Length: 326
Image (cartoon, rainbow, N blue to C red; front, side):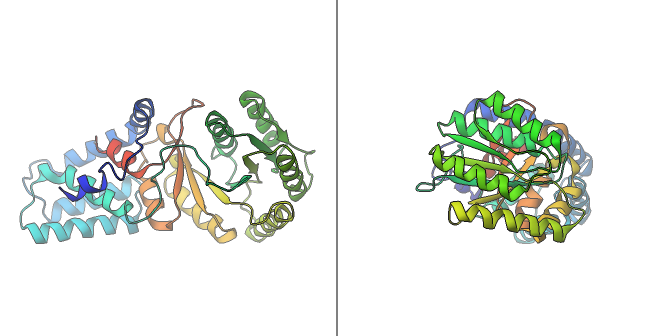
């Protein structure tokens, strides 16, 4: 059994995502795949074997696909080792080799293996604090996440702690109404920590399973943001110990390298535990998921592959690579 087949074997994917979800993923990655493979075809044109020139071209393709320089160098190094070991690799094998090596790279982390929206056992309420700059799809991601958790049978409560923008509170209210779940909010300009406190108290009183709290999307003052998020955490812990259970950073996949920079800034400002990468359907920069997952060693937990309410998916690295190289 090949390495690739091993990591994609049934014991790794005992609960594969649904056929409908696979089709949505395939469609969402279409622009990235088309761009990547058209470049790859040009890179190997007239070449029969993988040589230094092909590898140089491949390096350029991976970087331009926003896989990131560090991750690209790791992938190239792995392929160079195979060329050295096997002596001859045909360019017709390059697609399969890339697929194997990227999958191998991602398989080195213990994340990205979920296939369903679920919460850890014996964690109630499961509290998610959501961070990210304005415009990345943060509120939409929260709404879609709430929908998916409710669909999975959980009782969900939203907290509108991004109190610096009236639009943020209004948008979250629209999502709460659309999904049919309660929301805790105060007036614009209120103390975000106060909203978080009220949200958790309400969630406990309602015996909620999942609490999702929106926070301000500002990065112009990193120290201010750090202090604010620390205060929100401390106040939440007065109601429920060891919360939040997750700090979810939402990144816009279509911004490519800018997403890397935002990840750097937010991981410096607070302890980010997982990532959601949005808007992958509207960009050819889908490689950013591979790079961010590898470089930050923070699990990509959710990906947005379309505008529909169903188009937020749990990130499964096996399905992702499978779809990208299909």
